[in-house]
Image 1 (spheres, rainbow, N blue to C red):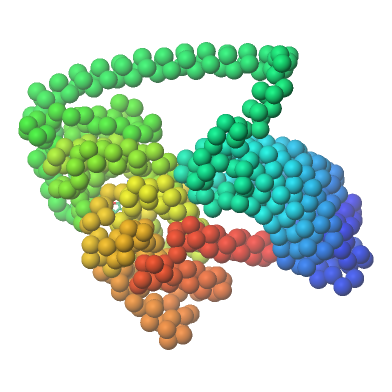
Image 2 (image 1 turned 90 degrees about the horizontal axis):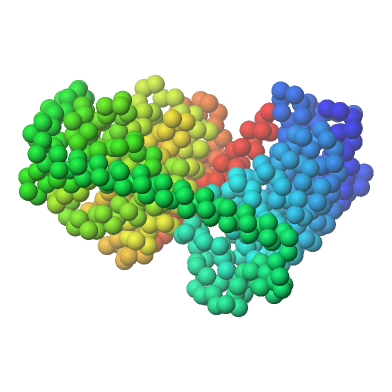
Length: 602
Ligand SMILES: Nc1ncnc2c1ncn2[C@@H]1O[C@H](COP(=O)(O)OP(=O)(O)OP(=O)(O)O)[C@@H](O)[C@H]1O
């Protein structure tokens, strides 16, 4: 590492620790050693080119001042630093505008210090920023327009003195967001159910969903209020801006008209198809290639879809733009199908469409839900979009029969990954799957819980792996809440409607136990939970873990932490189980610890 970089880092440390000359400092970096090879505490380098990537100096009792300009004005550091973390010290000062030079920063964690002052607008120029935590400080003034950073997925700024309006964030990008206990005012931008009131509480002049306080005219967003006060006549910039908007408007209208034309064409086609299908129902081919695993003959009558009149008269309702273009019921029925599962709520077929695309069709018979409620449910489900939730592409609904069409996931399920041979899943991947699944489930609970929609059948065979081997929750909302009566998962009937989501928390806890033990679940998760609880009661906790995790030297501390989360989730009493939001936070903390330890090893 260059001499200049070393000197700057040492000066930065002296200033931020408040221990000049590093006397009495808990961290000592020496000029005669190298930050990357000399194991400087808190410094993590890219092993390829020995550049400084992370500076992690959390909870070290530092009481100096922050000088980010010192780091970000030095080109080699500014070009390599991706993660700066100083959480939980007593550092004062502010964030200098030079932070904008640290263009590679993806994470800036400054929570729990005594930092103050305005946030520089250059913060919003950090295009690579993903996680920004400035919570529990004394920052004041308005927020820079952080909504322009498209990849930002965590923003924590609670407990400061920030004011003005909240920028128009796209909350669907965020897994954590909190601006509570500040002095923000005006309308909250559209939250679409991604975050609850907790994220906005404690701002007396803030209004609108999800806060109970509705907005009146006096709550006009600051930007609008300023415009109306100042506008005697439009300025040159305003004229330019408005003509830009007008041009954009024209483009949108043309685009909408085009879309309408296309939709009309498709509708005509479906109509024609439906008329045709009614008369050609007899031509529907028999599905073939039945899976040898199930050794079940699929006959035409089993997979064809008769309407109430005995004819195929309704079309598929396509819900997703990801659906293969012109996905039609007729094509589904004609395509070769392979029975791949017969679960407690229906059969599952893998279907190869004419164009070679594979889809999976879930066929649910005799579900007592009315057609109206089913359609309504499908519409709600399709609106809750999340990258780790496999939403149905399309559905079909008649009185006796419901079909749901999903994308085929060729990497199979978590069940197969954990219990198949060879078992190829290491600790880091297991923790990653746990964290991602927890976040996705927390999202669904937030989005759908108030509609009374739960997963209701969460298990490792319903966690599928996408092409990047990331987990996706499948078959969400396919089970009726009533179907869970008497289930050990803790149904809504156990303790009132508030607990409807806690059955899913139980199911998720069992998945965590499977990830940790590598053992099979029997009888609705009961055997495995009983076994784990008895071993832990006898204080043989270490015996619980999958042998392959022990032999790869996975951190026992973090495995025990995850086990504690799992045990809380499978608590007999639904009320004592945490919410999925809490679970997701706990697992994320364990994952962050794991990431930090991995980089220490480097
Ligand atoms: N979209 C999909 N792509 C690939 N495989 C899938 C898909 N959906 C389900 N599977 C797999 O197909 C198999 C059968 O699924 P199915 O849902 O019928 O059974 P199950 O999950 O064991 O039971 P249940 O009906 O109770 O959910 C499972 O191994 C599941 O992981």
